[in-house]
Image 1 (cartoon, rainbow, N blue to C red):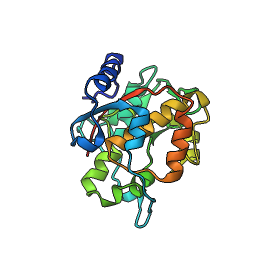
Image 2 (cartoon, rainbow, N blue to C red; image 1 turned 90 degrees about the vertical axis):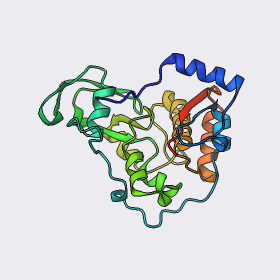
Image 3 (tube, rainbow, N blue to C red; image 1 turned 135 degrees about the horizontal axis):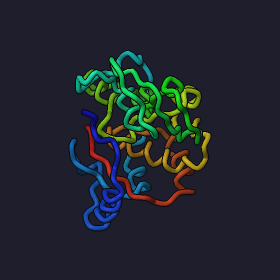
Image 4 (cartoon, rainbow, N blue to C red; image 1 turned 120 degrees about the vertical axis):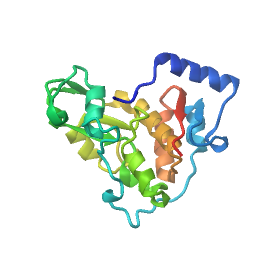
Length: 223
């Protein structure tokens, strides 16, 4: 059974109302609580500190597991959920047919292997920003986060590999029209997992948001 991965528009509207009535902040919330606040405020609440990649290995984030034991890995769960045209799911969760939209480059694809599943905040970036202190279970949960639709997205392999482990200070989606969403989702995922940002990252995110609406975010804290 697939986990829900999308926020309904009504929920977004309610989050805006929550901000006006009783704004919750990441500082005063606990894991499992929902935080609702304007994106500029969410950015301001993220702790700022230098990044440290000492000891990082991608292997420290066990990814593409089959958490619900339905035969489909996290990768295929995302592909199935995000398909514009649903693929046929065969034995061992083999996908045939279907179509997908890659928001990074504003392009459509009809072959699943042409797509990568991107960790919006890359694993190495998460490590640099605080995941180096997490347990192995927490890192696995991060690498396979199906509980928030913004954490993992299907994008073209070319754009994902161009991005690699970069943050918004050095890489932004080629599709300029997606950059407001990208910055907002980046801040949301860092809030969800209580990750820090560095000075260059903060400056880049601020520059992007200065061209965007100060939209409310709503996110359930994972940590």
